[in-house]
Length: 205
Image (cartoon, rainbow, N blue to C red):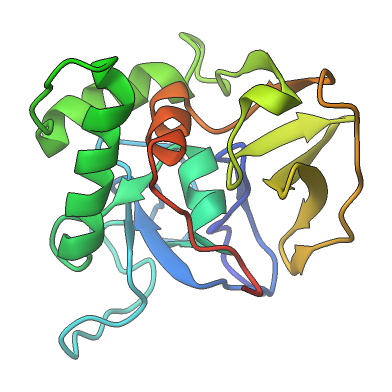
């Protein structure tokens, strides 16, 4: 049986066969029986490469952080994870620069530290009770690479259309009026970073 460590765009953890392209970390979420006992333990939610400098780990080892997996980078961003500053250093720098550009409103704004971004993201991805924080927006106001909910299911915005999300990949694109209101799953600051030029990796592309 697969472990409960596959992440959907809502940030929820599932036990499914598909592993995905990236690994993530939110702290130690499992017990010694490798059962999930917490959704998160740290506000530092990151996305890592699957292999780094030949390191080998036992997945869900006792007292070690819980390895999480994502279909693609668009999914990890929607869940509220950012690029790791160690194993994805160049990508992290690109993300910081886009974050700053997306929040500057034309005024010079220094790139934030990892801790500063983590604090903002923690407030943007979670409600006080622990549920997923979302907001409403018109489809036309959102950049490609953002994941939204429409008709009760998550979809990726691509070329102005919606592609239904699953752990195995994306379905066929469907067009909707540009004024259609959707529920945005990707946190606001990440949406701004994407609009400022940060292009998420997307499964199958």
